[in-house]
Image (tube, protein in one colour):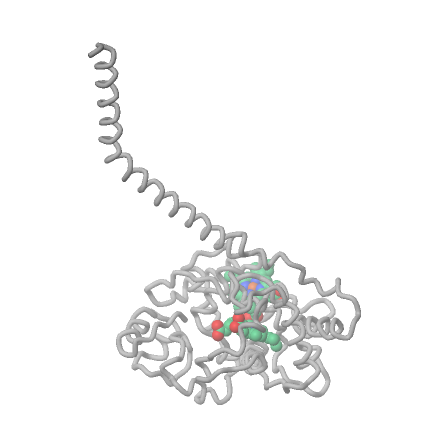
Length: 348
Ligand code: HEC
Ligand code: HEC
């Protein structure tokens, strides 16, 4: 045999041995790398979905002043006005025909006229209804949902389905919903999730947070301030006779804390909150311990009382925790009770 052939054969053999030998190592490594890359990409896509790209719906045009004066557009614009200056149209500021009992506006809680993420935005609301509601234990319509806020947040009575103002409000919400997906689910729906402390609300700290962060606008007595023309509040009251009643979502400490975290002091957003979760929790407890109107017939709320949110401030309850604990926490023992006894997971 030619010496060169022998050497080449030897080299070739050891080379392929090397390859196949290391393939045992390389192949699995390669597989792991591919899988890991897949996860990274996946995470990246999910990350995107959770960040700005799915927030895109908020960047669409919701400026009613750009609409022309067609009949439908006039209805939308009227709905926008009712949403922003509610009292003037259906409340105490209107002579006769009063439906809302206080001078709040829908936009005082549904910020940026219903287009701010984590301020219970109404983009997609039309697609989200009809919807199951624990409060009534039945499927509810959008009209009934608006009237839920009328009877609680607005401390008033139901606005008739066929009234001009109800139709206008629905036209406005319908227009806000025009880019929403078929199920109406959008990122930033409802309120931001926060870590509810496992302790009870600290009212002393709540008052401190209030004095340091809220009174510049809502005033020391919590009664807020009117706009110069007194057509609506510039800074709405947080308690007292002109505030939401104790049947409102905002009287639940957990809901109020979530609203406050991403929205108050005014200027806060979910991306740039100002208060810590603990501060939002304490100040929410503080404002909700002050006097406010009583919801009528609240005993008949929640036909199935097991479905009542844990921080609903009034009885009856399907448990034996005190009213005070339902108002001020700690909430984890109550949540655990419902999980164990009824297998119901409660978030608010
Ligand atoms: C005091 C604050 C406040 C005011 C004022 C208020 N709302 Fe609400 N609204 C809430 C809260 C809080 C929720 C969420 C309640 C919950 O989690 O059960 C809500 C929920 C809603 C929903 C359902 C939202 C969803 O995503 O499912 C609609 C629709 C609605 N409000 C319409 C209105 C309209 C219309 C007005 C004015 C007539 C109004 N609200 C006034 C606080 C308010
Ligand atoms: C810079 C002014 C400003 C500060 C400071 C501020 N708010 Fe507000 N707040 C507003 C305005 C304005 C609204 C109504 C939003 C709208 O109509 O666009 C509002 C609405 C609210 C609402 C819902 C409407 C109502 O009347 O119940 C609550 C609750 C609230 N603020 C709580 C707080 C708390 C708690 C603090 C302190 C941690 C605070 N705010 C600090 C300006 C402020």
